[in-house]
Image 1 (cartoon, helix red, strand yellow):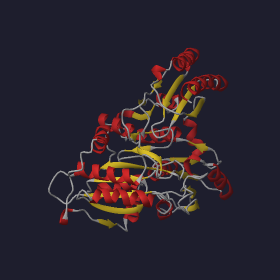
Image 2 (cartoon, helix red, strand yellow):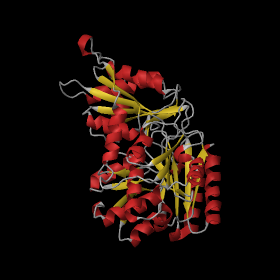
Image 3 (spheres, helix red, strand yellow):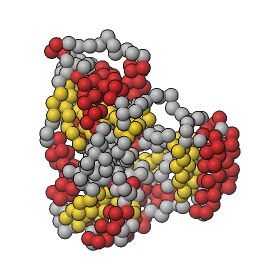
Image 4 (cartoon, helix red, strand yellow):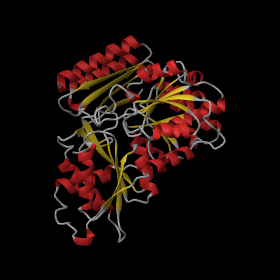
Length: 458
């Protein structure tokens, strides 16, 4: 049985994946973006070389505003900015590392609607900044410790646009696909969610030989994630059936996650993809320590499927950054989230929807089996998830009616299920997950916890 009851965080800006909120309101204002840029630039300066930070974004209307503000803050601290325009989060991680930049920044709210935006950072090695560095950024901002640092004359930074970043990423993504294989003869549907990968993702699959049916590749600043992409694979499923495609690939707004649809139009989530790819890696003797790293959100069915294969699952708190940190700390090379963040650490430093899809296609080609057959490896335990919008966050330990409802649910499920109640790290929401053998029971228990939460926090 698993139980997680997250408390509120002491951090004032950063959540599980950077800073996020409604654009042009606190905290996602141009003024704060400039301050964040100044703080990050100050932190990365450690030497006499000319420092540089790569800045990319998705396709949101507010990206222009925040991009310019962030760049201004960075330049004001004497650090150069390389603007790459719309590019996926993993693309920015790759370019940051490839260019030997001192840091990388992504302006994106990932799967959120267009009115939201966010900022997240990568270190020079392409990995997301750890919690302690994010706390340092907040300290520099809120304690006004940057006011005395104002370089002048030749010491002010400059901004340069990089026109070939998309091409560099395409070459990199294709390099992760086995050279002896080809996608020729395969028809795939690619839903780019009108997001950051609307140009690069279809080209990766096409240049490897696939016939690509493109969906949602016409961003207008307001249609990102709008009824499409990884959170809304329904239209992709319909297109797969209409075109007789072998696979449907749905990315989210910044393309760091993927949800796929098999040739029958049935959705396959991150847990199932992890099971399929873990088995393949293990057969190739390439799964480090025979272990998959997942979060507390992954279905118990993943543990069951891996145990049948003699493999293990280790879990972390929610957030692909925590999956990556656990992998690096313990020498693992594969992990991910049910939501579709999949990390193949032998290739990438963060979740990458395009590369994850290529890995899945590799399994399909080498096994000669359709996805509808491969996914039988994973049988999910019935799961009920409810998201509740709340007015505020409080430590669950201070909410006796909520903790009583959680305890009652745990007692009724026993060892056959689990209860997970947590606050979102990116939105003002409480999330309730009940997992157990009976779906009706799960729904009843979830509703009881939600009612307790609603009474306490709404």
